[in-house]
Image (cartoon, rainbow, N blue to C red; front, side, top):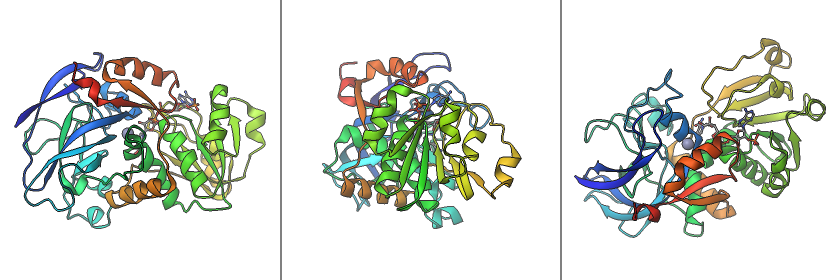
Length: 352
Ligand code: NAP
Ligand code: ZN
């Protein structure tokens, strides 16, 4: 065991602050990684503030962070995929049982025994797992990803959650050239959704509550931008979408988007607000539309997404911050003031 530097929250109402945590020495299947950048996902904020307590209670102290890129510093004797000096990524999961039907299907995120990168039982040290707001992490090699070397590391970190969470449902629902695809909410996830839908050849419409993001949305790959508070603008798109990805972190009227789907169209929710949505049955019944959800993506698909990003030179648009600005960044997330992902430069933790 060894001490690592980290930022943790002591309670749902405490700011994140500098601390020391214990990490395990790498076992034979483990990879030890020096963390270089970690993205800030809105899920970090939901968890730190215990907003998901009805589904998963947060255990404190909580060290969030599941958009990790870094360099391998040590590997266990049985590790074959990585060697010291390699670039490596870690997303939302660090373990699963490996034998259930979900794992066998490459869908580890749905394994009943999945271990998340933070706030999950730690079978090695007891207590709970600690995430990437830290200078190092030790992870079983099955859950370590290869990061294409042509990508900027600060911009690649968010691919490990925001990237896979938007890529996976688009692949699942068959987004392809010629389709009309909507992306709701231009935050960390949404801006990646726009990039992927564009790269997959769709006609992309971005929906935002922030008129100031219009120019950016077009630059990111949207063909059209709709200010969602404007009912007339919304009405022009009624019944026209094959697929809509809803990446909004707060409660909002999902029915307004269901009504924009064509027959057999699908809207997938990836945003996970604190309170349940109210859904009108008629919106779904009329036109046999469907509403579904999606959780990150499996490990093989995460690697596929990273390789796709390497080939198409896709990264997140990031604002790089030192770790001491993390609490300020959380307040800005709540004001939709992020362009379009905060990425923590973990070198800043050295002076803490
Ligand atoms: P984020 O960066 O804070 O972006 C959320 C965006 O939602 C905002 O930038 C804003 O975009 C829009 N928005 C915020 N409040 C709104 C409101 N009241 N009404 C309408 N739109 C609003 O968050 P994120 O990191 O992308 O995460 C988004 C959600 O996905 C979070 O709930 C997060 O926990 C969840 N998530 C889910 C998964 C999964 O596997 N399913 C994975 C990661 C994250 P505009 O300014 O453009 O309106
Ligand atoms: Zn996330």
